[in-house]
Length: 254
Image 1 (tube, rainbow, N blue to C red):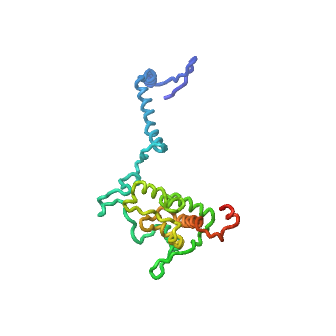
Image 2 (cartoon, helix red, strand yellow):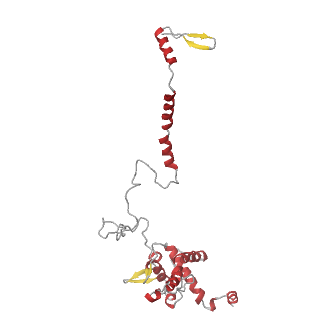
Image 3 (cartoon, rainbow, N blue to C red):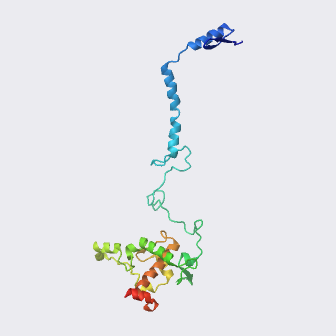
């Protein structure tokens, strides 16, 4: 079948040598697609982008509170227990499990007792270190760091001056706790605390003493030693011998 081109003024037409083909083309040209069908095709085409747009929005919209929807969960969304929640799985009814005895987390093999404990065992007895660990430099910035950590974690009970008159103690007295056996927090300027080695004070921060809880899980080892350094600075502010003062310091204190 040949399709010679016939030129007419203002129009280009194909001339079909086969009459049947020519009739078919004429019938196709006369077909008019209904408007509703056109609109339906356009609607289906546009609707096809909606899932893609929703997927893009769910992937990059970080402000929404709901978690992202993704078909491969990879344990991202699964049943879990909250902190301090109850559980029937374990005999003690607690979902939070204690650390397994004897295990060491990766990167936490603390082999330096001076830095991490503040004492070493000699004949089964704890001997507290007097000096600061060698890896620490006790300077003004180190003491300033100790002051910051002391004010955050210690001053609520011991007070910012270390005298044991912190806000918790004052609030307890105002509420009548003294009649129920409330014990005032220890003054860090007492003779008992002044005589303690640095490692003893470090161990108290780490593990607690008597009614004071330990802060070992909340304060990093270096920051515990920084608090010890700041406590020593507080103690010197009240008990420094006059012979160790410079003439400038004496003039300023007069």
